[in-house]
Image (cartoon, rainbow, N blue to C red; front, side):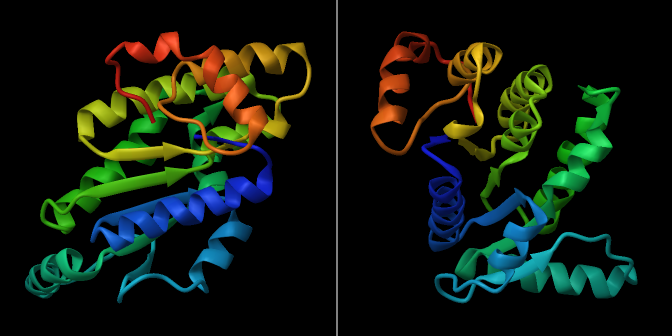
Length: 212
């Protein structure tokens, strides 16, 4: 989704996470460290569990017992998983380009492990990976990342919201990137500026390709 500015993007990330938790989904937020810290101390609907992303090393029987218990909890309360978007990009970028294999290791593999752990509970991803790249003016990388997300959404059958702040798109090169990214995303949200862009992208949305 596209938002007017960083403040509305922040609200969009929170709203996306809150909607998923309210629906009992497992919500994965991939965001800047400062936003993660704010989310970690935020108030969330129902009794959603907060889980910073990390590797678990447990005895198999203990892990299976915990996972069986968590499967019930996910259906009742949802879960919020926080992942550092800047660290993820550092792992995915090679010479300024997004590496598909690194994306698979950094995004696809953890999401597969999460889905296996929660026993098929619905998963929603809310991320600002692309926005970080746009702020850095790494437009080609942002477009390549969006293309990988489209494939991931299809492969994993996950709901996904990629959040961008429009005021980060400055200059002619950025305008071209914004148009290309707009055609790759399913929705825009925000004020008048956002809806002017939405109207320009209406026709390309008519195809059935999955978007994030």
